[in-house]
Image (cartoon, rainbow, N blue to C red; front, side, top):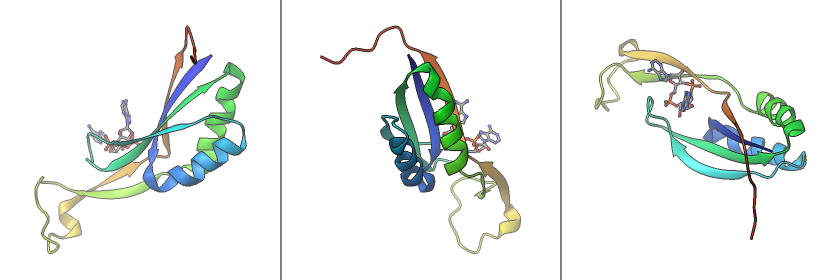
Length: 108
Ligand code: 2BA
């Protein structure tokens, strides 16, 4: 058995979890946030058979999209007059996956 931990963008999470569930993957969603952008994202926990790892990877590839985001070059500046030319472009997502081997899975 494998544990897949996948970090995805909030705006992809409903479509992604619905598609995973339809394909028989059991999913737990956790509200998380990224250390770099300090923005909310979603972490999915999925306990799966080894054969399902590809299903999860393919499903997240189909449903989670890379997007360009902008962040101020200096932190703590919120003035809307602070122009785009003072921001850096960061590309975020689709999905960041970690796959772990699981020694034991028990439900009591
Ligand atoms: P954040 O940490 O908020 O990072 C958002 C995006 O900012 C990243 O997108 C990446 O393009 C960029 N970025 C992150 N750290 C950077 C740095 N030190 N310098 C320059 N650019 C940087 P993604 O790579 O798609 O990551 C999206 C989210 O996935 C991350 O949000 C974080 O929550 C998670 N993540 C990504 N890699 C991870 C890792 N190795 N371990 C744990 N969490 C990770």
